[in-house]
Image (tube, rainbow, N blue to C red; front, top):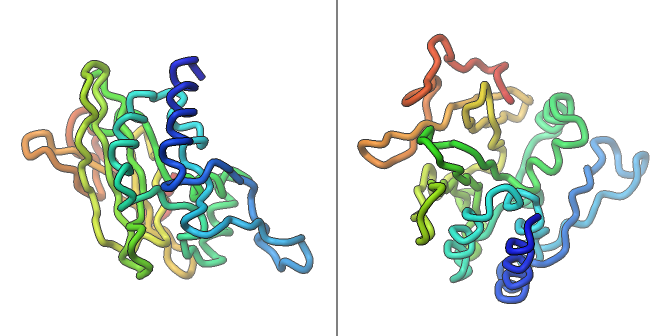
Length: 226
């Protein structure tokens, strides 16, 4: 982590303590019976969520940090975390089979960073968020920040999904392309590519890659999950 980013993070933790707590717990919870495999980790209430600022995602993308802090400053939204999600046991088994112990951090800090918009010299940020004033299943959203290499002003957020039930959705990459995967109660996966339409300045989901660098014959199938 660079010194400048460290300073920014220290400021954030004091200024935005009301939005996200300063502790972090990325341990993987047990998939078996608690009495046999030990107690389930205590994740805390939504107001005391494991901090997204310490997830490591901003270490390689400090410009996205300014965009994120601007987005959460009024307290309306926060990053989702493991306690918000409702993956079935079958889905958890699938995730653990694919990612090992890293399955839990993937849902505890549901965000990706990289060239999501497929534009030159962009290092974007996508995050599954929740509305802090709601408790219903449709409190989720998926927001993307297009972060250019140059530029001083924080980029505006682009809402891919808003007021949607994303309680069993995983944000990830497949074939170097961002994907959102919806999991069913039986552990089945329904994946979609995240595409950017530059002309209309919007993101959309599709079973195929669309836009710059799109590859042919890339239609997603249920087994394409990571």
